[in-house]
Amino acid sequence: MKQIIKVVEVILLITILFTFAMFQGGFVSWFLFYSLTPILLYIFVLLLYPMKNWKVNSKISSTHIHAGQSIDLTITLRRLLPFPIMYVSLEEVCPVTLNRNDIGKEKYHSIANQTIKEQPRTLRKLLFPYFKREMEAEFQITNLPRGKHTFTHVIIEIGDPFGIVKKRYIHSITQEVVVYPMSYPFKWHVVSNQMEEGTKPAQIYDEKLTNIVGGVREYTPGDKFSWIDWKATARKNTMMTKDFEQEKDAQMAIACMVGEENVVKPLVLEASLELSMSILEEARKRKQHVTFHIHGKEIKHFSEQQIMHHIAEVKGYLSTIAPVTKRREQLSIWKHVPKGAFILTIWTKLDQTVVEHMSMLRKREYHPIVCYIRPSKEITMEEKQILQQLRSLQVPYQVITEKDLLKTRWEVRIHK
Image 1 (cartoon, rainbow, N blue to C red):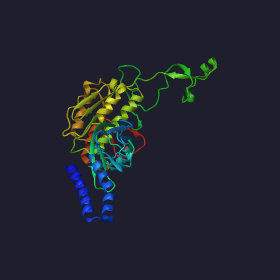
Image 2 (cartoon, rainbow, N blue to C red; image 1 turned 90 degrees about the vertical axis):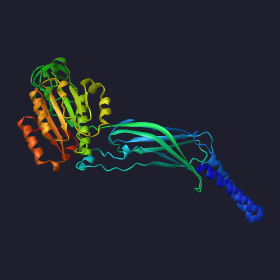
Image 3 (cartoon, rainbow, N blue to C red; image 1 turned 135 degrees about the horizontal axis):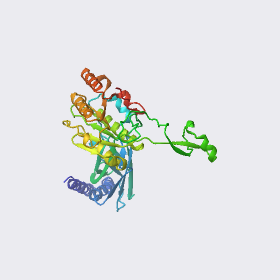
Image 4 (cartoon, rainbow, N blue to C red; image 1 turned 180 degrees about the vertical axis):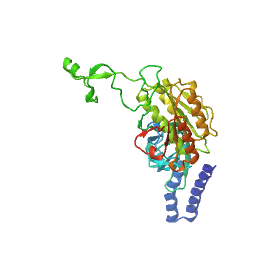
């Protein structure tokens, strides 16, 4: 209807100018008519110019990235007729899920905040195509937050240089970007010191056993000087080092307990997911036997094979995790983990339920460990008493605060 009204207005204006020139006569009247007629005719044709046959292509540099990283978005417009257009306003409509900025570890300075600051993103560019048949606009979207973000449509607007006519066309084009939780360098403290099946696992640091020699091999850069086997070196006339038996890793389970929406702070949840992802990446790097379990809106289990060979599935699931209305009280990890295994639990809420779960795991001959993420100034006396109960149960624990999260390398230092 607006377009029809504009067409009628232009025709009416041309008619008025012509009538004025006919009745008034003289140089000035006809000069006005001949001067304005080309402009009005251009506006008239612009009103009738079809935009539906424009081809719009959108290309994203990467559809799967990690939180805090950036992507490049390129939009290409192609048209058949080289009709002169003074300007094209191109806008990619961003989903509301991109209103947050993820600035990496620096965000944990504000871990105590109950809400995360949001600001709508605007991706708009002005192009001057004139007679060009192909136009291209590039945008960079930085500091993407965790989640699945779907771009649904592009808004194209053209008009005349005098602002009399503006035509808008919304082109539907769906593209999805999956942003995984970020993983950071992680210092692994809990590994197995067992050499045979059935023995009790013990806690050691990131060091290799050097007391059981399985053979010799050629020297490789990075080997310690003390590992050199001088007899074998003299015999083979080449540098040889001792080859030690590799320790077997104890079966481990990582359990991330997603907190309730009205309790857990948004950045605490992000920290729990990024910590889980960091531990899993370190376990994969070391080829350790580990399973992963999420207790949130639903209970989700990931096997060792999924973690080793299909880690993208795990990351994709973590990208969609949100605080739950009510946390599940059932802890069913033992159904998927053999007895005697380490179970590292990551909590965003500490109450008496945690003590009950850890006591139950101890009775089932597991070795539970508690990681509790909490702003340092908000640790209450009640939570300190719960930590004391865990100590009496001989359950190792660590309270992770913003001070720990801001470190270059994350560590889990268990205090008994």
